[in-house]
Length: 377
Image (cartoon, rainbow, N blue to C red):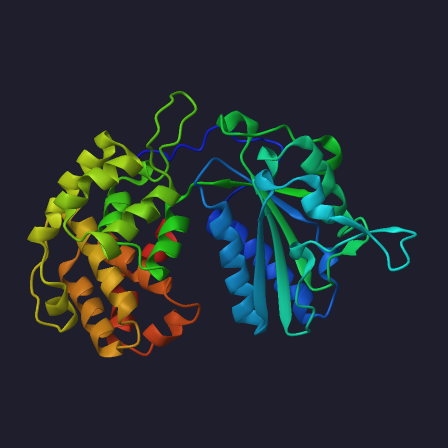
């Protein structure tokens, strides 16, 4: 039923992490520096590699959110697309000093950052490998010395870079050795559990989550072996979700739009899968404790769990409804699908398990099926 996600062309010399693993690792270390009042420059500038749409930019936003939540500091992201820059855009425009004896450089906008103690700045140099070598050379000083010419980054600034690999057949120039040696490199891979953790919290459409739960290999359909224009990546699935959530609720009318994002063939499979949702029990009845049945087919069970997870996240503070849903899972869902549902609930908040432990239904579930957590690990 499931196969491996396409994560080809990995560089064996650097770590290959999911978005969630990279976020957890990097955010934890920056939070430690901030809480211990240590200089942020002690941690090396980080370069995130990966194919188009895999989630590199998303990782930066998640890191910022984690830092903001844990340190209570405001995080500002300055997003610079280096592909669109010239070297002068980084150093600034030359002019003369007051007595016209020396040349000075006007500060570029990217260096105009808030230096307050209650602020953390993130300078995100995106598409670095697509930039010409002259612009990459201008990034040397930023990554190591945190300066360009006479302009200096503030002490409360973190530097991240991101780009596609030369093997991705995107616009990509080989990174000079002098620049690569100034960076810590992490390759981002497509990973469904990482995507799902993010998707639930960001209200990704339940049909997208359900389909990808059933076909995890379709999360990332990127390949260098063809010239297809439309293909599935975490980014295009988010676009599909936006269409279904906000633009066109009618799946039949939305079909050509979705085909233009993930391809005609994959949309056909997605369209057929979505018909299952018409056969599911009413979600509101489940959470009100009124439903006494569940589907038997595997694809329908994935659809039901995705619908329940999406509904539960929107009602995560209504513990009576959450308790009813856990009781339903305990009685009517197969053990492995009830585990999937409970595991989704644990993504809601860092301390959501503690909230669930106050529910009799959750404690009963742990007593009878809690061993599934160890089995999956």
